[in-house]
Length: 301
Length: 98
Image (cartoon, rainbow over all chains, first blue to last red; front, side, top):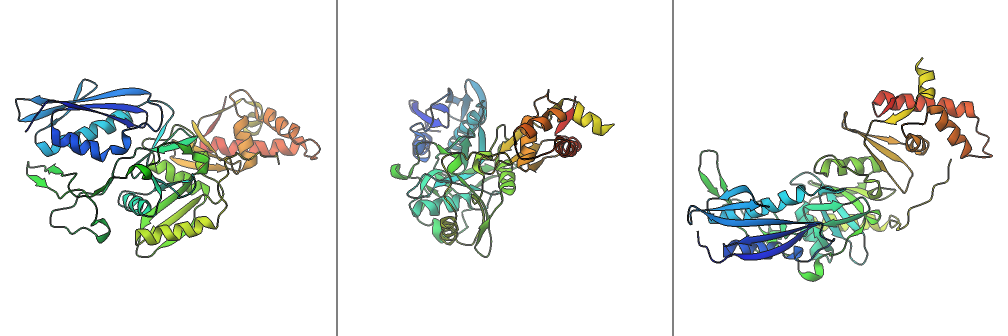
């Protein structure tokens, strides 16, 4: 494994300032580009995590340490980047405090501060819809990790990434323009057979596309997404929307998510083609009242 | 009898998380044991929010009547509604009688 003098990089992953020090130039170059959106903080950092990559047994392997603890060993060069990223997520999940991490994409409607929180199982199309949203002028919080304190919502703006593809598998046309060179992945099989997958297509959002300040959860809309043979968009009631947010949270939520739901603020979208799905969603949203920035006052009755 | 205890015993929440929906005044309680969400309407939400580990069902009924001056709401009727509602929450395991 080719090593050089270690270089350092600071990334702001929600409230965790993550300092990475690594002697593998290719891994650091890719890390810097994939996580370019995390070079400035969206919310004030609450703690610092350090990730140190060091040589083990000469140049045959690299240790990955998180805050001084060994968390992984990279045996081959292509393993370094994904293992650094695994440590980044580990540091984020360890962050305590009244926060809910959602496995959800979050993009912001053009021309207004209304975040759309896209929830759904793996493969439902969070990244595909996030990519299509960028191409329609939305601003980007995340395609994967949405964070909330119950009042505000923000994201972890890593590059838009897709599932690894086998080398023989053709990319869908909509991903053809994505940069294939940033990420190469190796998976070690159960019998030690190493299977090399194709590159993970990525799209690194540029500066003007990034949403770099938290938005009010009260202005959000929750969209439950699913791939289907037809495109349908319909309202979703508050209870179902809350159930989806529960399903999307890492661990049971620790705080109220009631600010995310309300009349006309949740939808179910089944989509066949992402641009068509977003058009249908935009049309339905335009027919519903905009969320209110002020909480309503309730008369007893 | 269950009816008397429901109105006379201090009430405490067992569920740790409730989502308060600002726009509608509803409350959705997360029953972690049953892994389910229970939606409460506005009156149910008012009862839930008044449960503090010390108030009894009778205390809560009195507070609701006080909040509706001139509405002609009878205390006995409100007590009956609160008793039935609290019994339901106890049955679902999200409230306990102390």
